[in-house]
Image 1 (cartoon, rainbow, N blue to C red):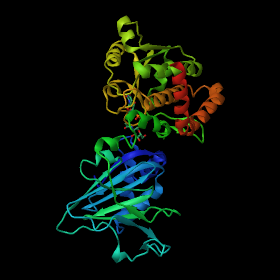
Image 2 (cartoon, helix red, strand yellow; image 1 turned 90 degrees about the vertical axis):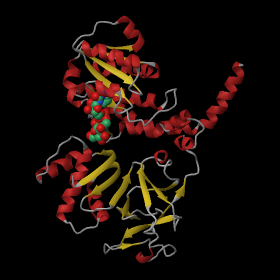
Image 3 (tube, protein in one colour; image 1 turned 135 degrees about the vertical axis):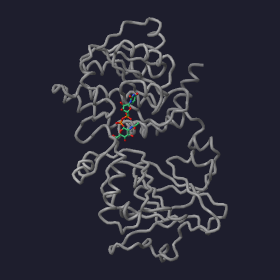
Image 4 (cartoon, rainbow, N blue to C red; image 1 turned 180 degrees about the horizontal axis):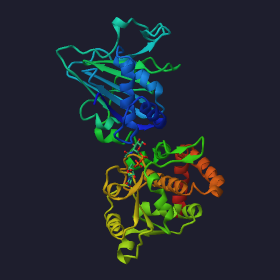
Length: 426
Ligand code: UD1
């Protein structure tokens, strides 16, 4: 392991990169896009091993498409760490017992001659030797925490630097510098060291009074995340890595059975007609508890879809055991990666909505609905007569995040209307 990569997000051109690396003799031990990043680092390093770690990172990022929050370490660069992002959140917590000398970090730009320089803005321009980076006193250690979310850092430190897209943070023997992967006009030339004022509970609520409120307002992002890397809006196609190897068996099914509890059950009800329209296969929807009471016959050529936010719903888990024993193909639609349903189903789709803490489901519901629509599209995409309808649906999916945003902007107005209606009812 010459390069170690921690990756949050998705690399959309990973197939092309994999093909390229294979032609250069590289072999792969997983199907993940993350492994491609590590191998690409190695490939670029072997092409030119004189580069500094951040320069190598720049070269690698130039090849990557998609969204990512990355942390990279390497045996070639001992005591150094890289953190960089594009489209995925990333921050650096800074912990030191000594007061930090600066409350911001300058961004180092690259000029035409490929030399590192600071901003061209004369007010903030300083020479490299005077870099306002985080430079610790050698006797007082400084610790850095790299994370996508402030809530995981706050127990260690309240001082954080939020990285911008294309920032490359380079930590080298305790020194932190920020470089840019590419030029972008109009972006601030410093990254402030911010103090998180809020307490842990509040941070996690992101400034909202309740988790439920936060999760409602997250929906423009969460719905997009469900589709990210899966729906190709340009070519109007859907590819779900989680079920593509099982499509032949799924398409052979004579019926689909959806099993869920609570709000997840409602997402199944909401999608049923579209599912039947696209697949031409009858779909039954059952509450897990009711299904268990009846213990209905299940056949080997049935496909059973289990929908659950947590992936741990006890009744659904029992139904899963029952259906597996009957030899049916089981498909999960869950939010929690590594949960029981996610592990015990034959295949499935993670809805990638992010943790849902509010008991009443909000963003998980919208993402479940979208995931189920994507499944129906993927199952039925071999039927040529469906093509036009597929295009319409994918165009509709593309608009969902913006439309939700528009509705959420009306929150004050909706509150006023609700107050009026509520008074009338009383
Ligand atoms: C996966 C990776 C994602 C990576 C992408 C690259 C995971 C969790 N996801 O996403 O990080 O960027 O490949 O192509 O590592 N599964 C079940 N039951 C379920 C849900 C999922 O068996 O209820 C299985 C799927 O069949 C699949 C795996 O879990 O084998 C991951 O599913 P999912 O995250 O939906 O797959 P991708 O979107 O391809």
